[in-house]
Length: 177
Ligand SMILES: C[S@@+](CC[C@H](N)C(=O)[O-])C[C@H]1O[C@@H](n2cnc3c(N)ncnc32)[C@H](O)[C@@H]1O
Image (cartoon, rainbow, N blue to C red; front, top):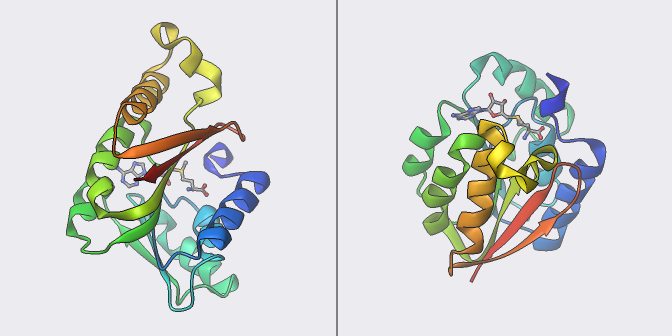
């Protein structure tokens, strides 16, 4: 399912954002092959760590191979399981979170991570345009409706300030005030 991969442009944007922030702790929700994890990990501060979660254990070995090839195996920790079960067990203050898993759970992921994000930290969410379907939510698919609901939710959440980058399928950047 190559469509699940962040493309090259998005990968470079994620890497650039990470380099700008020099985060110590990154959380990624949705690993797939590990491509976006590798891009985000490029900007980590020295001794920084990225935790990436995926429910699909079949990808674990392949991801570890790619993390090794990218020279980032010591910086990236992959956790296998449902993100909604794992996130509450993480006692870490994150500088940066990237949400890129099951679309219908984005709003719940936001609720789970917002108190774990440092003041001034960022939450990125992929696919917020959902192929443009969010423009007509009444006609949209279940996933597009969920993305529309996510966009509405965070735009009305006083804890964050948001900007939508119309790159690829749309990346929403939320800064915790
Ligand atoms: C779009 S892909 C991630 C792509 C990756 N971030 C990239 O850009 O290279 C979405 C991933 O979310 C995972 N996923 C779906 N539901 C999940 C859940 N409940 N918990 C954790 N991961 C989940 C899928 O197995 C899939 O690998």
